[in-house]
Length: 183
Image 1 (cartoon, rainbow, N blue to C red):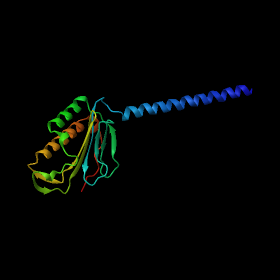
Image 2 (image 1 turned 180 degrees about the vertical axis):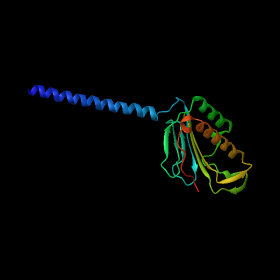
Image 3 (image 1 turned 90 degrees about the horizontal axis):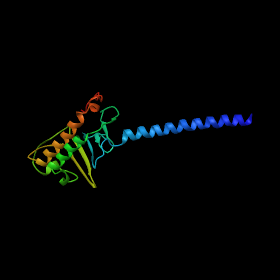
Image 4 (image 1 turned 30 degrees about the vertical axis):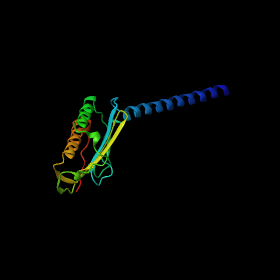
């Protein structure tokens, strides 16, 4: 009788162990599928942009294959969003075209060109790029309205291209719109 009870207890422990192990493996697989990059590439980037006084910005991260959207008064939303090899190639070609890797880490819009005014609602931008073993970070803002600054115009073209590609994705289009805006 004692042997039979002992066998029953051991069988239940084994069953619970199998269930627990299956759960852990399932979580690991889901986590890996969600946070791993979408395309195996030696070119990846993190592009953050948003209203100047907001701590959590919109962010496209190709290292993890995620996009985070600033929801203004609500918590930001992060989704799985993959860029295709063609998308990455377009962005990289634009970077090469504008000589992105020669920009300073902190790009000052006011350095060249004529300052026409100062915006009351401006954005900050952060772009960290990894190509092979090289990493480059450039930060800038849109606080000043300038004329004749071709380097700034080229950075705007790059930022607009990335936003255009991201916003065309069905995953992005399914995201809710913020219920409010910035004053």
